[in-house]
Length: 124
Image 1 (cartoon, helix red, strand yellow):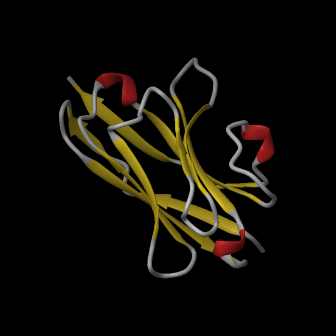
Image 2 (tube, rainbow, N blue to C red; image 1 turned 30 degrees about the vertical axis):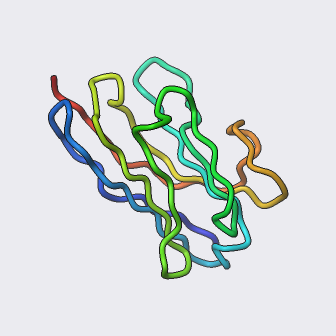
Image 3 (cartoon, rainbow, N blue to C red; image 1 turned 60 degrees about the vertical axis):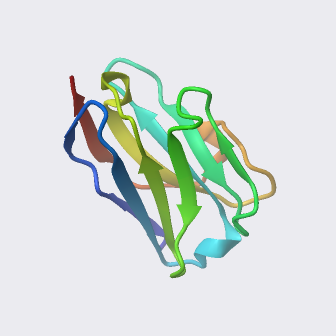
């Protein structure tokens, strides 16, 4: 059974940095494009970043480009999102997701598996 688990979310202050982790179980992580999304209360789920299975290609939304970095871990089935210079608008539930197919999509409907999310709250 394929399962994704996010961790690392917590309450931080504006300007702080935070690193989220995603662990995958039940499949070979490196065969998937992996993505991070977030959803704030009352808003749609938003694409943040994605990375191809080889780690050679990444994509970021304009809202986080230059502040967030997506990466794959040295251990199989791990992925990270390093976030810096956080602000109140980054407050959301953060999800990792896996896309089994070509490309590096931004649409949530293109992703096949999802974690339960980890909460990031930025206090100003």
